[in-house]
Image 1: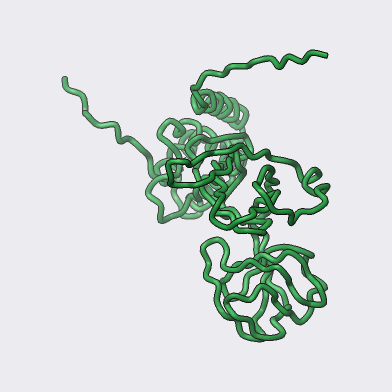
Image 2: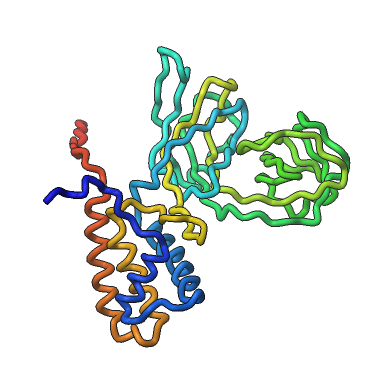
Length: 304
């Protein structure tokens, strides 16, 4: 007997949901059952993000550093950064990656001059919610695409430094004085710096971001290279498969079965059993989903 010769087995979400309901001892018959299972699936993947690193969600990114700019936004689906370096002379034979130390908010807040320029040596990762908040604040006069000061009608409810959006353009400002946002960096995160009309409304933006110290002393010399954990993509009706590798299927099915058992009265007697199965499957997956590199520890010796 010959084998199939293929290794393409996967399950679309509707079949995952059917399997989970069957483990709960019921049949999936209605659109509502599918919809509530999809909602539970999205909550389950968020739980996985809280449990630690999922290797398939690691992505590399780069941010060219601009002279004097303190803060840079990260992609909205970023959970956290796991590694980062400062790269100099990118793309040349003298390219070099230099360590940059991650510090806490407390350590960053104690830096006396956050606008000091030089080679960046420290970074604070500011983990925000990625949400936008419309305001009634408007531009009090028109600005050009290159303006670095932005006059507004009333800045009393704006943070002393932060991100805003004006007609789709993302902007970072360093301080506020007399209803003017100063030291603005325009067209961030792939948006385009453009002229803005008087009366345009300002939206407050709260992205995940990095704060660099010292700020770059020259534009184009330094690149912040990072490896980030991104969110697992949403489970939607238009996606044929979930954003997980094949080896995570047993864990995701066991976990969703457990989640559904807490909502289906007929399955509640099975909840403890399904939870135990879920923890076993997740631990098996987590044990396999890890770095396989060797770890070498060297004690530090000091002499007095």
